Length: 133
Image (tube, rainbow, N blue to C red; front, side, top):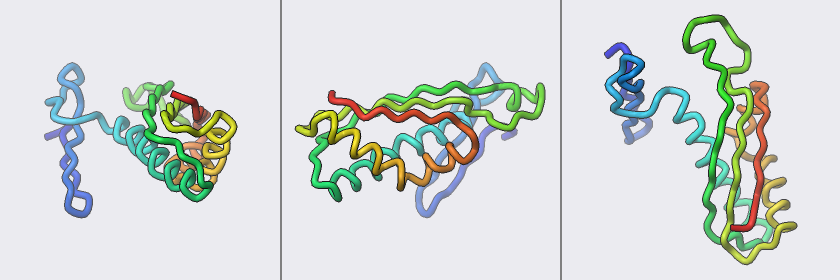
C-alpha cells in the first residue's frame, strides 16, 4: 500500500507501516522505529562482545531508549538536516560488573557499534549510559 512496505533481509521479512491515525494499516512499526531498534540491538550485541573481550561479566542487559525526533521532515513541513536530534540509551546490566567496568564496556562499545556511528555521524546527540541494574 502507500504506507506498508514488506522488506526482506536475507531470509527474514519485516513489515514497516504507519499507524492508522496517520493513514497506515498499523501492521508494523513506522520507518523510523526500526532505526532505533537497530541501535538498541547493535548496542546489545557489540556491548556483549566488548564485555567478553575485556573479561567483564555484565550479565543480561535491558536497554531503554528515548528519542527527541524532529517531525518537520516527515510531515513535509520543511527539509531538516538532523531528524533524530537526541537519543538516550540506558543500558541496565544485572551481572557482577561494577560501575567502572560498565563504563569501560560502554567506552569500548562506542568504538565499534556501527549503528551508533551512523547516528553520531548524522549529527544526533547520542548518550549511552551503562548502569547497574
